[in-house]
Length: 167
Picture (cartoon, rainbow, N blue to C red):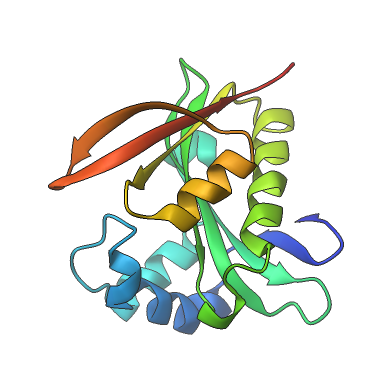
């Protein structure tokens, strides 16, 4: 578990299945992800039970939870891990819509960057963000990600950002 004063990150557990099912199958969230079809409960249960780790599965999801009551408010993922380049992508969702734009994504991203660079020894973290997603662009720029280039993916222009370890 990695924490700051208001939130902490923890691995996904089976009791997270109902909330993950809601977030993953909310079509409004699909606009900022690569999701194109709903997930079944069985798929989410399999994912939650699989104890994924960045080194063995090439991806890892953390739940973003309030420090006080441990309630999950979102999730943050490392994915497309490249062991040779020590590089991975990051995606983040504050699933509880009323809690968006309150600084929790910034806190979670900073916690994940600390973990990625100091525990997983990654060198580069990247994010691809729809060019129209100004909130996410602002978040990643605030956390010192640098714009690299535009990519065309899934019929959208995606802004590619990176941050490199300062060690």
